[in-house]
Image 1 (cartoon, rainbow, N blue to C red):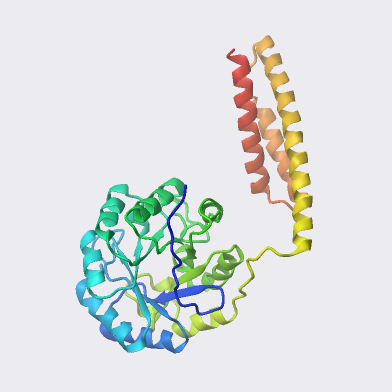
Image 2 (image 1 turned 120 degrees about the horizontal axis):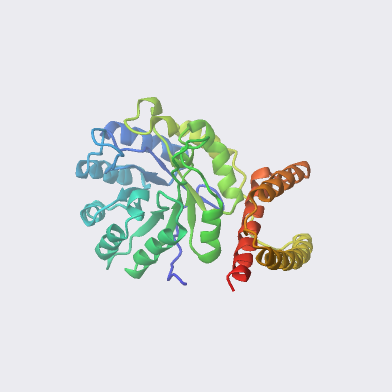
Length: 354
């Protein structure tokens, strides 16, 4: 799987990452211009604001549409910043391009709908605009990649992804669970695709934005898109996850931008040790599965069921406690042994059903 990509060439606030900032919604001309000028004064080069705001339920503020695009155009003229906004329909694209919007992003709800993404892709044909695609609402990597392929197939080569976390029924610390393994896998499969982190939507809380920004950069993501408002507590949408331009500047000033280059001999030596241990792990797993197949033969001979729930519970409890004592999280151990058990059951089922 390959994407035909060009560099985004977006101006960077730091040496190795670009930052997109601005309010969740373009509420009023004064609010947009005040926020933009404050951000520009802090060295921000890319201004974002929601012009169309698809809300979960009707009745809330859903954006001003075209009149707000005039304010975005004014931001560009008066500050020199690039501008970015979300689009969800071909009509949105037509209007955004008419007013000179530099970066379009596709929201999580839209990414989840291949029909909507294809309509957007068709509308983008023949343009040279930068497009960023947010992950779908649910943790579905194939759906995310499918949306990127559709947009790229329309000829859009200045393309990137936005990681904004994934919705879940059970709310925990974050508004949207980061599930970092999914954007990491996206980067593994599409190594030249820029991936931007949206800590505002992941956190849902302004006090969690700073550590999420650092974690995203530590994991090798390429930029940040952060919601910033001149008066966050009075914001018309998502007030709790927005920060002032001054606070954002404070957060950015303390970020550590790490080198992604792999040039250390020490690092190579340590990775060689890991490779040797991984080889040993695979061999041990193969030996374990051989014993599981012997158990399958015994169960078949004695007419026993494949799954013995008491034994399975004993393994999870014992190995979870053992891992915890050795500094490995219980949830990690649980996931590992659930996968091992699933494969053991599969192999035993093959034997019993021969």
